[in-house]
Amino acid sequence: MNILVTNDDGIYSPGLAALASAAREFGTVRVVAPDVEQSSMGHAITHSRPLSYRATPSLPFEAFRVNGTPADCVALGCHLWGDVEVVLSGVNLGLNLGNSAWHSGTLAAAKQAALLGVRGIAFSTSTTLESEPDFVALAPFVHQVLAFLLEPPRLELVNVNLPVRPKGMLWTRQSVRYYDGRVVPIQDPRGRPLYWSTVVSLEASEEGTDRWAVEHDLISMTPLRLDLTDHTGLEHATRTRPVPT
Ligand code: MN
View 1 (cartoon, rainbow, N blue to C red):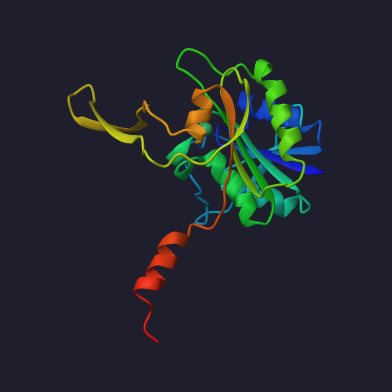
View 2 (cartoon, rainbow, N blue to C red):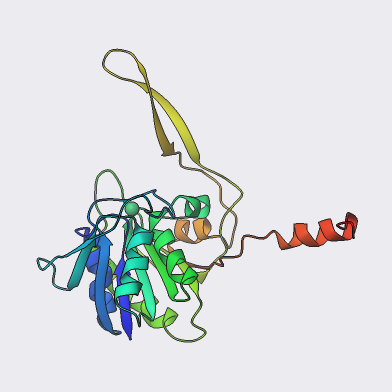
């Protein structure tokens, strides 16, 4: 099995090394990842300039760094290595729960795979100001999730979030009740206004969601789909106000 590994934290991230190491147990690994950090770039693709890649022999994998976004890396990697069976993205330094799926470059790489008809699995874990994730401690759990998700039913797109000390695994739904993105005003040294786009932690979460699982020390696995259609809304709309014929 050919496994393409990418991320949005950049090719030298310890999370990418952890994921690529775990993936090696399951197939042939090739890393194609951004040359610099591309976090929160979402599903951006580069179309106004050409892309290029460079071999990166300092890593213990076949690895290439690309001057583009996570989605660019997947598109280019699948183009150059035609028979990719699964794309793994991460392990991101920071959780991707709930509505952060809209901004996440980590998840966008997995989505790009799904758009190309290739299975995509995104991995994220929590990180704090004080410490980076302990990828040695997380390694058996990453392996466990891969062993589980690479077997049937082989879902096309899964968002995986790992707590610091996992006690189990849970299928979850995306938490969409809250959006925790905020614009926070600050000042530059001369008193002029500046603004941080950031997230503010939320207290409550609904049972069975990705956020709830991680709060309860469970590995969250959320199957996703590319179809953004509001099927309930569509059914309601066509029933109550059909398009004139
Ligand atoms: Mn990131």
